[in-house]
Every structure is written in C-alpha cells, then in structure tokens.
Image (cartoon, rainbow, N blue to C red):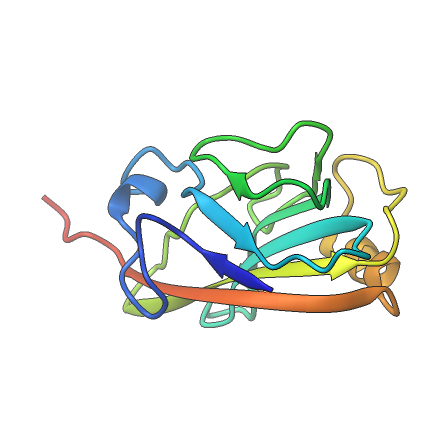
Length: 149
C-alpha cells in the first residue's frame, strides 16, 4: 500500500497552507495498492516530536477501501473523525511550538469496518483496530513555524 500527497513529498516540508499558519486544512492525500480484502481504511496523523509526547492531529476511520484520495479540506463520505489532541474532532494542522517537527500520516487497511462513533479517542480507535490491520503505509512531512512578523 502507498500513501502520497501532491503538495509535499516524503521527508519534505508540508506547505504552510495546511498548517496553523495557513488555512489549517488537511492536505490532499492519495492511496494506492490497497489490498483487495480490505474492508475499511484508517488514517492517523500525529507528531511524535511534541514536547508533551505524541500529539494527535487527525484520526479518520471507516474510509471505504475504494477511496483513492482525500481532497484538501475534506473528509471522505461516510468516514468518521476522532477527537484530536486539540480537544476537537477534525483535522488540526501542524503547529509546533518551536523547531522542526515530523508529521506522520499513517494509513491502515483493516479486515473489518469499525463501529466507533464520531468523536472517539485515539485510544478507542487503537483498541478497535488491534488485530485487524492487514497492511499499512506512511508518509512523513516536516514543518517549522513561520517567523513572527
């Protein structure tokens, strides 16, 4: 399975448009080579470099395996979103307090659809996913806050 974006390459800078310094909307993402037996997809975006531990920026599940992309500023029809470390459901873009941070976009193919409701926590999502991951892909981007004007 492969995960990519048309606006940044693996290891490169995530454009400010998709961060707290811009419009704070999700970047476009493309999925390829999803296993035929996948029943659903999960996307988790987090920052392991956050001062207090891994910071969750987005979790989306029940993505139909036939979906090949998530457009910028959108959620696939029928998918559900969890509560982030910002305390709200939906995408919260990169917003590191200092220095350059890494942002991991992780796509999982599951052999089941999940029965979680909107607003579930990352812990609830991880428990529901356990023992159901059949493939995964990852895309890492980096970001450092723009200098104060």
